[in-house]
Length: 231
Image 1: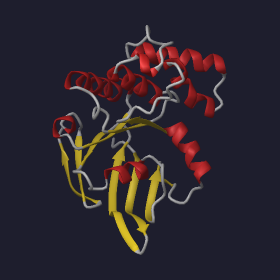
Image 2: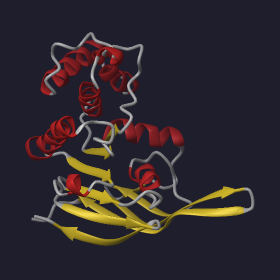
Image 3: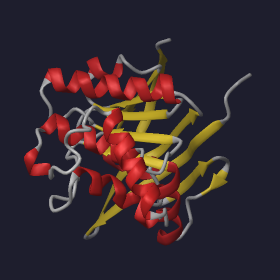
Image 4: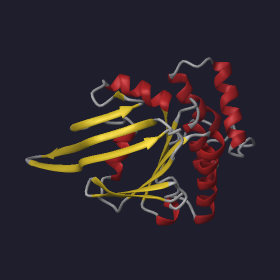
């Protein structure tokens, strides 16, 4: 039985106006990922990767085209509606970690649950469970400045899972890490895919990282130019 499509992007354009000049970051991008897939989107600098992340993650709306999440068109929703969808359905892992420096590891993970109205007791229990899952049970009360880059990225992975999303979107997740720590982060992503059944979409320029995915979609000049299945 074929898995259902969870995210589908159809002929999506994103155009930015810079004075009198129009810059087309995406030029009719088509992309589809099925529930439970691990897909890598690869492309060089300037290929439209960041804009693609914004579209796939419901962080922005397209100038033209359709974006479907579970067959529902979300391309024209309001920002508040998009924020609710993001909070419930999609977990984000960024290259820069994006942790709040004044909060502890546990508090950083609890924050997305606050916006979804999760009761305090459940927030605490979930955050502690996730920190143990990424082997940081002994760093719960540490702030980001008291942790290494690899530990901060593991907190970011745990935070991405706070609301138990179906999709984890990782944007250059090892970009600021040394190779050993990067491999550890990739092991966690593979574990999420295989053991937790999460749909993983990883955006990267690193060919070695993309080999970990089931499929690679190559992005250039704002469109997917080819797709390669690996296993």
